[in-house]
Length: 234
Image (tube, rainbow, N blue to C red):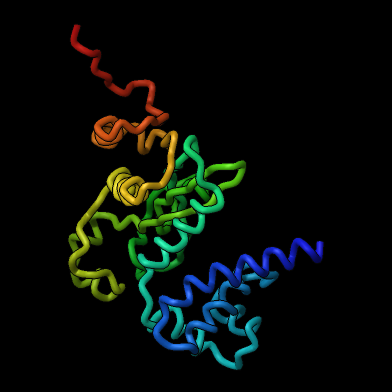
């Protein structure tokens, strides 16, 4: 077990060596490593306060600065992660999986929150919904991209978006459109992939299916039993 733990620690340092280059200053660079260790550790509730305590900091200020104000490029971090995953799990018949999950919330101010279906809760809840892209290969899997679903009720309310920190340039996008954006980024980056798969939220979107066909990308997407299909012309 100790050897396995040391191996995991070496991999974490190797990954952080790449991610650390995204930070301009040494303080958030080092704190980001401690934060990652906390997320992987035994902290019961991985919120800002408990992670700050686990790191050994007297206040929450440093962790808040890392998450809210430190200058680093989240999209660049996504690209670093994707490359790291491909190096370890990449194979020509790997699978890209699109799916969503809900994050239950109490209030009305978190970006994109509203009463909507949450697969996590199994019912309609006040929640945020995120769309995720997972890569599965060599018997393992890892998330490589993400997008927050921002309902039209939010994008049609600029003042509410501004208060929540949502950029004014953000336009409404359906969950299948968010999935397509993530798939396009991954495939354009040359990620090896045999199949794309997802449930009927994504299989029911004809534009997504046609786009995958236009790329010659094999896919297995669930569709509802009443989904209209066009037969090829004879």
